[in-house]
Image 1 (tube, rainbow, N blue to C red):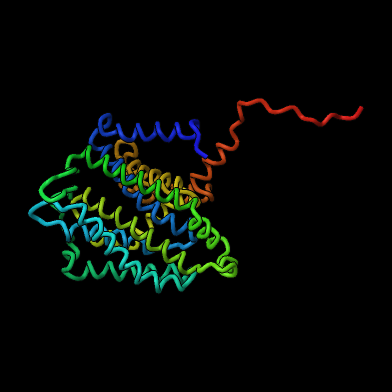
Image 2: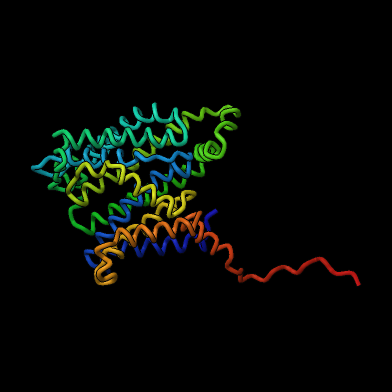
Length: 336
């Protein structure tokens, strides 16, 4: 149940985020866009890991599919149209997800991890070793897509502040969709499958169908994140589909806590800010040249010390906070 007290922090945070391009420099605005795009990517994987208990090492294939579809469909002579681009991006990702999901979801545990990794690496080498997507050099996107009906431009996101607000709105809609989904009958059934799939199957649920739909939804959201990434950087290369990208977003989910959407966002925020911190020569000095070492040690320490992630730590801290309301007097009276 939402109350004024519970929604006030969220509304304040949304207002601060919306005003960020006007109060921060261009560098920090670009960093915030990167965090929001990867936050959307992490939330899509959280639907699989935290929702259905499906740990995937091939999720970057959908992220890269969305990015490549954006670059291939946007003409070099002008901007693409989001009204056409978004359905095409979703269609490409969902078609690939339907094929790979129909096969990989018939496996479990380590076998599911390995088969998703194999499918993603197949997609990686298709773009890396052929000229379909520019080979290892990738493709440049010279114009950001826009919302256009015929000759009438509804919204041009080429301006940095407009693009920032567009990414923020997309992240907010995805958050709202996943929040409602997790509280729906579908989300409750998916959680039951994660806890005990055999019991859910014995209760009459078609567990494969639930997992397949979750797999498709996660692929679609990841492709939207890939589309935004391509529009942000104006460049797409095969590394977006590599297993390292899948490992990075999986680490975001684990670091933040796979049990909640907040965990996916907290993990994304922490991981990207730690990367920026350890690469900064002004803060780290000569150690900035060896940032992979310090970054890796820090991640190992955080994962070891926080088994439930950053979201679990936040939840624990909130529960331990003393209540300001007086406790009711006890009805127990000791006998004389």
